[in-house]
Each structure stands twice: as structure tokens, then as C-alpha cells.
Length: 110
Length: 116
Image 1 (tube, one colour):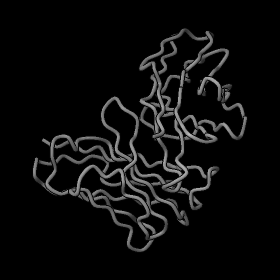
Image 2: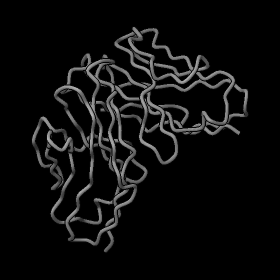
Image 3: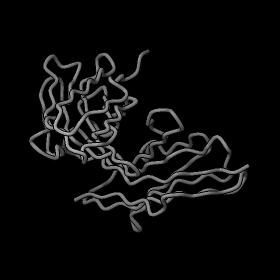
């Protein structure tokens, strides 16, 4: 069974500090992974996906198949990055329904 | 354009009552998903529709949960004889295609259900 683990419930950093939100997965096959973000009082939205290899709002994530990880990184955190972050893995069945990790709350202090 | 909408946004029910939660997906979106998010946890899959066909309901926690999408657009999640453990945020998401790996799921704001 596929699983996504986010070991940190809360990550608190100061503005300008580097950020790394951890995500580990278990999946048999070639995974496709996403990071979703939920800002305060807003709906869950896609931040970035592995396949696009893009940088969104300064965030990047690299898939490491050896370590089964997909950590989200940003070199210099901003206060507006404060939010809940969820790592997610689509299932090849069920229309690619998503298996989510438990989420990490990022707090960026001034 | 309009995103996914859900109603009601908040619902308080007494234990044993039946509730119905509505989801209006983005127009033209083929796929529709329901997720349940308990407090402090990530969303968990409940069920999936492709147009009007319910192709997967493996995540529904009990036979008290029932979902439909009769005309392939609006969907309703019904919970019968609600229990306290049903208290959660119920999220609806839709995507344009039939679940390809590049499909993006767009989420609604959720319905927060509290069972007293």
C-alpha cells in the first residue's frame, strides 16, 4: 500500500532562513509526487509537482528514489510562506486519487 | 472562472441525524473526488467519480456513507445516522481529465461537519 509520511507537524523558522519540509513515501512503481499548500482561510491548492521540475514561489522539490523522499526546499523563507504544506502521491487507480501526508505547518517569524 | 464550490460551509448535526453535503465542480471537469480531513491530519480519499459513474468507493468508512453524481456534474455526499467520529472537514476536488498523472485536482473550500 502506498503511504506518505511528513515527520514534522510544525516547522518554525525566522524570515530569511532556509526551509526544508520533509516528505517520505512508499510506492511500488515510478512515483509522481505533489506538494499542496493551504494558506490561512484559503483552500488547498497545488504548489508544485515533481514532473514539472519547476520552482514556484522560490520552492523546489527533488525526487530522490534511493531515499524515497520528496523534500520541499526554499533558500530564504518569507513571512507569506507561513501555511500548511501537504505532500501527496497519486494512485494509478481511482483516477489518480491522492494519498496525502499528515501535513507540516510552516511558521515564518519576522 | 468559478472554482469548486461546496455547501454548506459549516454543518452541525445531532448524533443520529442524516446530512447531505453538496459539491459543484468546475464546469466541464470529468473527474470528481471526495476526501475526509480529520482535525490535525491530511485529507483521506473517500470516493471517485468519472462523469456520473462512481468508479471507486473504497475509502468510504461505512455503509452509512453514500455519494452520487447523477448527471455527471453536481455531487452529493450523504451520511446517514451521523456519529461523532464523522466530525471532519469534507473536501471535494475536481479535475479536467480522466485521471492522468498530470491532471491537477482543484479543491473546494470544504464543509466542516460537527456531530454533537
